[in-house]
Amino acid sequence: MKADRGLTVERMVKLAGVSRASYRRFDDNGEAGIDPNIDLRDAIQRIALDWPTYGRRRVTEELRRRGWTVNHKRVHRIHARR
Image (cartoon, helix red, strand yellow):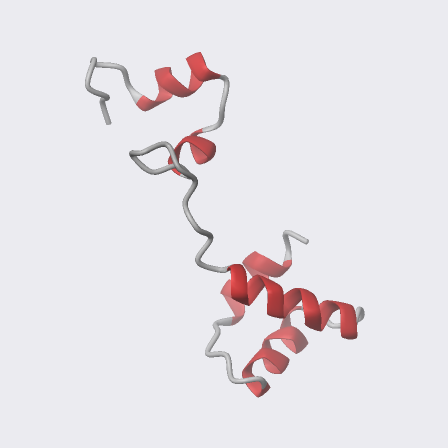
């Protein structure tokens, strides 16, 4: 990917001193994007606080009981970052 002046993303992030993930987190207007997992992350954190011994499998089951349609891999990805 090249910017308007011919700079690659790799060069821009190196010059700015940020990671590529941080660079991609912002839209073209320079505003941070909204995390699409924020509600799910909140639900996972509430379950983890209520039942601290629950792992990914039990958290996934509890989310499904609460009406979420979630995949265990997605729960693992979000739950592992706590």
